[in-house]
Image (cartoon, rainbow, N blue to C red; front, side, top):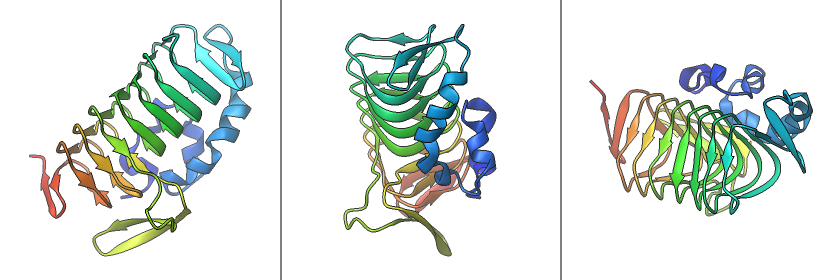
Length: 219
C-alpha cells in the first residue's frame, strides 16, 4: 500500500523512470537533483528553453517576472508559476500545473496538473497527478527532534533513513485549506483532507480524513 503503484500514476511525470528503480516513492527524493542534471540537456529544445543554472522551462509555460527560480529545475508545458513563487531548487513541475503566489518548492516532484496555488510550502515531497493543496496548506519536512522520519501506519512503521521527508500525496488528493501534512505522511489516491487538519502517518486511498482517529471511507 506504500509502493509507488499504490498511490501514483508515474505516466504523468517526466520523472517516471525514477520510480521504477525503487520500492517506496520517498526513496527518489535523494535523486531529484542528479536526475534533473542528467535529463535536462536531453529535453526537446523545441519545447523547453535552457535558462542556465540547470533550469529548463517549457516555452508554453507562463512564469511571472516576480517568481524566483533557483537551480536544478524543470517546469513543464502549459504550467503557470505565479507572482512571488519561490522555487528554491531540485524541483520538477509537470505539465498543466499551477505554482501560486508566495508558494515555495524545495526538492519536490509535482506530477502533471498539480495545483499548489496559494501560500503553500512543499518540501522534500511528491504530489501525484491532479493533487490539490488548499490555501495555506503545507508539508512539514523535518521532525521537531531532528530524528529520522518514519512512515507510521496501523500495525507498524517503516524507517525511511531520511532526516527530511514531508509527504507523499497520491493522485487526485484534495488537501483542505490550512492543513499540515507532518513528516512521513502518505495520503492514498482520491482521498480528501478536511481543512485545518494536522495529518500524521497513513491515510488510505478513497478516504476522508476528518481528524486523528477519524477517517471515513468515501462511498
